[in-house]
Amino acid sequence: SFQAKITYSGPLALQRKSLQRIKFDLTIDEVIVDSLDERSFFHPYEDIFDPNPRLKCYSLSEILAEKTRALYERQGRARDVYDLINLSRNFREVIDAEKAKTIAHAKFEFKNLPPPNVQAIITRIDEATLRSEWKNQLSHQLRVLPPVDAYIAELSEAIGWYLEPDGKSNSLPSIPVFDSEVVIKRQAFPHAEPGNVVGMGTTAANISFNKTMSNIVFAARNRLMLKIKTKAGSFLAEPYALRKKEDFVFWLFEIDAENNDHGRLKQLRIIEILSTEVLEKSFCPRYQMEL
Image (cartoon, rainbow, N blue to C red; front, side, top):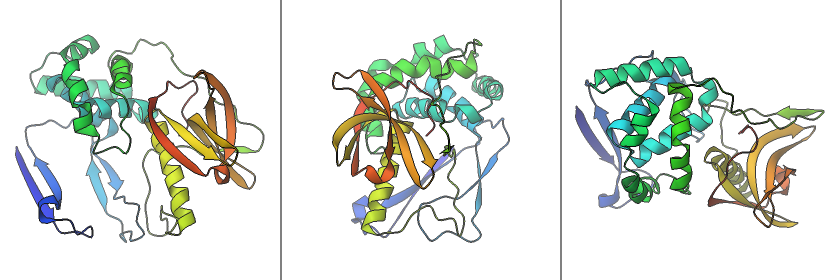
């Protein structure tokens, strides 16, 4: 295995000791079981490549199996825990569970490890080290750091749903779709091509709008509460869905009551939101996450 780091002078004009860098990890000591996926090169800026390059990447099933093996070998490194929970929460519907299980067994066998099972993996995790390193390993990569307790509590289920499925349905109720409402479905992978720019420009209004959208999606992906400010006041909410009706787009939130009990579903038009703040407070979803 080889590692190379290349520093470069970029538009941020950082000091020499703080220059941006690209790190390459090259290895032949690894087995790739699934076929590779091809994805468009993505960034949120307007200077999209034309034609946009296609990159070969691990499939989601391969990544899930690889992270499971890393969880076992590295005894619960914070980034592995975060990545595995993120995959389980937000990509489960597009992952082939049986294929991921087969891949995991192949990866454990390649590394001369015992066949994977949930109990063995959980037992290997050094919880004290995970807690102590959670902030050091993740805070510089996330705008708001989720509490580690929520991730530890979710680990067994996040591995077991594909590695040891029990056939039981733990699906949450979906939010009803009312007349003339259109569900704006989540996009597993961003799609950036010439003429399909993700950004909305650089005016003050557009920057504010993009920040609001980004905060809400980040909170949904990481199961974090939002503090939302409107002209009527501020409140805490759990983000669930994005819908469209007639000529306006709105969000669906579960509003948190003053006593911290779950309150009620609320429709809130995007133009009504003055600001959003992602809080370091986890929530357990009551409905299917559409975001």
